[in-house]
Length: 308
Image (cartoon, rainbow, N blue to C red):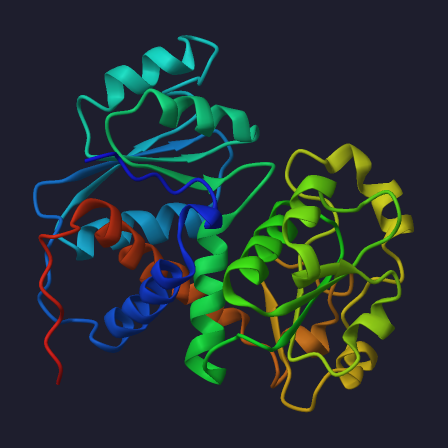
């Protein structure tokens, strides 16, 4: 059987994606129930780019499923520098059951996966952040049901999160409006692949009109610190505040992958307000990634959790 990797949301069919979301919701509802399908299995976590939520959610998730997570910092492994990526993949995949990589260049995870015997998970790259989308989608499905036919607005940079939202729109059938300033558009090939599911709307107020979900991210991600001043100028009108949320549907939700810069890309009032679900979204990284780990590592071995 071919090894399944999760480098992009497009590695899952629409049916598989909906299954994972429902499975994550079930796991969350039955926390504390004895369930260890990954007993004896080890996940190697390679971090070239640090993250609190990614490390804790994968490490705790493996532990709760009966497995073990091995943390490898930038000091422990240097992909493609101390050793060719292809060689690292060949060696590590003979010792562990899966590898999660959080790095800068997307081509690194692709090269690693091409030479790995075990599943490789994209914990974040400069191109995509599919694990975060699993948590975002779980949060929406928990609170509002299926997202098909709804309108989602991305406000800010056409970055890795934006790319994964484009893929989600393509898979799950919602409309994505991307409000970004010129010069910060998403990858044109990724945008084109979504067809009518996603489109750029320059004016954030126009984009937000009647929307069901508003999502944003920091203006300057890790590694872009030298661009902060220029980005502040470019994104000055792309702030999710109370005025923008008022243009959305009355029951619209607000999401942010965190960490957030209050009074920069989002106002404190919105982040801490009744429409914000960022804390549920953050918690759901744990449950969504548990469902993903089970899907990749225990397919055919796992019995469904008992219903209470």
